[in-house]
Amino acid sequence: MMKIAMGNDHSAIELKNIIREFVEEKGYEVIDFGTNSTESCDYPVYGEKVGRAVASGEADLGIVICGTGVGISLAANKVKGVRACVCSEPYSARLSRMHNNSNVLAFGARVVGSELAKMITEEWLNAEFEGGRHERRVNMLMEIENR
Image 1 (cartoon, rainbow, N blue to C red):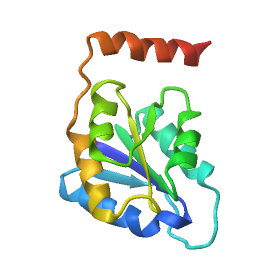
Image 2: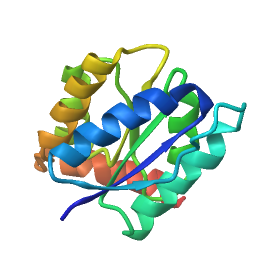
Image 3: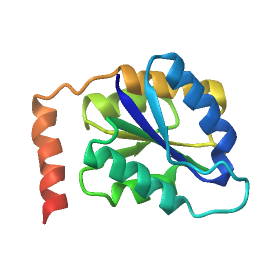
Image 4: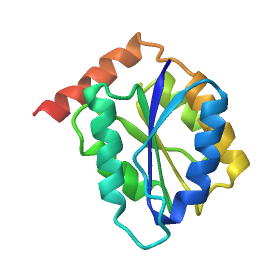
């Protein structure tokens, strides 16, 4: 069973729970690294936890959610081996997997509603890396990371 690491800050508890249920209904196991408290907290903590779980192989993929998706994705992207993409619509989510081999999806609880978030998540989960000319470019990204 494929494992999905999920992380969120205080602004995204409700959407995280909706997406968690959606992902579990699709047959994925969810490892929840997010907060369940509405008290203000620091999104980098949760972005890093998800990033480390994906990079170590504890999870196959990750989903991170904060107010905009930007901050938490930046935190996840600081972990070597993570390619987190912020997506506010399904097309970019699908292409981020097909062309960029993204392994962490990010979106904003204050940007997308729950139904759009489900569509984004479904497109992302169903897409597969195409390789080919994209493999060379992803390898170039990894080379930058290793410098």
